[in-house]
Image (cartoon, rainbow, N blue to C red):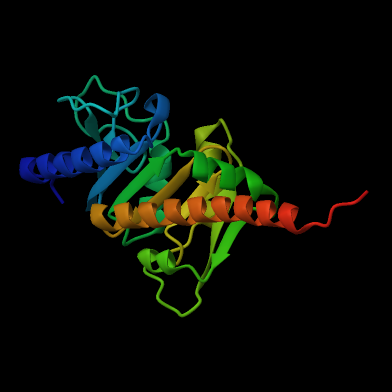
Length: 220
């Protein structure tokens, strides 16, 4: 399938929208994070953020097209984000994925550290689970957590082993979340749902500990 100029421009425009939305929420500290939108399945081709760019701003050189090996498909001086290979793994293993977003927040980093020993974070009965496309009453989700390997191919392999079509996200210990959807709208919705669930859980832990302290009888 050939990539038209129109489809390329449209993908870049939609990446702009997602990038600015997340930047306003401070989800890209220190130029961290990366975003992609798939343009073709065969051969796999997707638009991805360029490395080292300030994601709070727009420029003509924010994105490039890469293939399934995370290599540029057009002549360019831009370098794809270092973790582009992870996006490729998502697209190869989740056939209906059309967009993949990665952000760093305090919430997702804290949850990934708190529950790394279990290699997963579970939560049940929250309304925002429906934002992940899961509509069962009192539904429970379990989000896998992998070690933060500095070697990107090794990290990509670890992610490949745990991702499933049922749960559209994976946490990396102290390294944010990758989430995906059938298109950029779905990926954004999934990311927002995950972030709400993480923040809710962390605040619930804080409040429950405060209540416990208040109800413990004083000893003399």
